[in-house]
Amino acid sequence: MPKKIDITIKEDLSFLNKAFSRTQSRLQQDRIKTLLYVASKKYHYQSDIARKLGRNEKTIRDWLKLYSTSGFKVLLNVKSGGNNTRTLSDEVISLIEKKITDANTTITSYIELQLLLEEQTQQKIAYGALYSHCRRKYKSKLKVARKSHYKKDPNAEAFFKNTKRTV
Image (cartoon, rainbow, N blue to C red):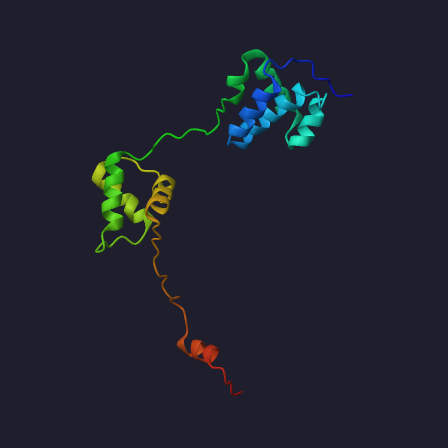
C-alpha cells in the first residue's frame, strides 16, 4: 500500500491559489498544485497526486521533502537548464559575422569556415558550436553542389531520360 502523506502545509489555500494563478511555468504550477492537493486534503497518497499530475511518484516525494525541509520559496526555485557556457569568443563571433554576411565570400562549407577561423584566431573551434551558431544566428545554409559521378555514361543517361523507348 502506498505511503500516506503526513506533512502540514504552512501556507493557506488562498495564498497557494494566488501563487498558482501568478505562475507561468508548468513545473512551478505542478509544484504548487501538489501543495494545494495536500493542503485541501483532496489526495492522501503521493501516488494519487503523481497520477493526477502525470509525474513520477519519486518526483512528488522529492518536492514534498524539499518543501518540508526548505519551505515554499525554495520549492518554487527551479534549477534546471544545464551548462550554458559559451564556447565561441567575441572575436570569433565577430569574424563569423563578417564572413557569413559578406556577399563576396568564397566559403562553401562550415569546415572551410572553421579552418579559416582557426587560422586567423589561433583558437580551436568546435564544429558543432560553429554550425549551431551560424544556423541559429544567421539562418545560414552553406551547401556545395555535388560533382557528377565520374563513371557516368552519357548514352545510358540519354536512354534513361528518353520517354519514348524504341526496342
